[in-house]
Length: 251
Image 1 (cartoon, one colour):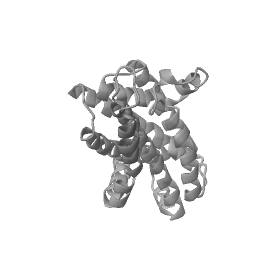
Image 2 (cartoon, rainbow, N blue to C red):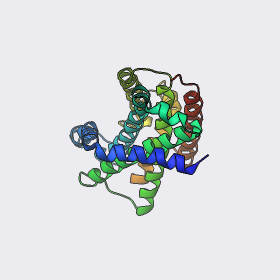
Image 3 (cartoon, rainbow, N blue to C red):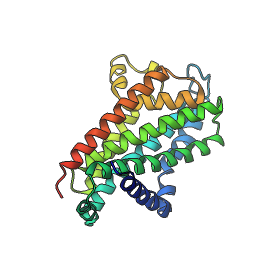
Image 4 (cartoon, rainbow, N blue to C red):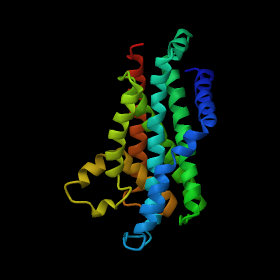
């Protein structure tokens, strides 16, 4: 592993992120819609166990999680663009391992996803988010980083098996929405039908949502230690799978 290679790939991703301001602004549109219309709209009519009638407080961690997950998946498409424009071949000519390339890309995607999540957290402070304590911030940030790593690696693994960037966007949309819907981000896990509960517990994003919710609100339906272990394991596995499939990728 060569830290300078990983840093270079990470820095390139960050420079692209900073320069594409339209991407930063445009990507927060849907989360803001959920926060302002769904959260505030249902705040007075939906009762959440442990949070009284404050549905906005309940849904904010889920929207933060959605933002991080969506941005992470979108980072994976960079592999396809680099492949299409020939940049990937130029990197592979250099005497660097493909794992370093994948790891640098994963860290870059996770960082951009984390920053997007921070934007939503800051916005949420103005519309009803009440932080329990400063330690909670750090806990939430830790889970955001893990989610970013896991789903950026997931995106890279998926992109390694595809050729068309447009097709990748359709596939990721098809994946993200069910994962998000089953994660307990919008409604409590305890309120779901009994036959859906096992599926929800198999959803890795569930542990990210509950971990962030514990950090931001102090309330979680799953033990936060279990959330950390499950999400950490998923992040490691996806990084290994992403690196393996990237090495098998046709150029």
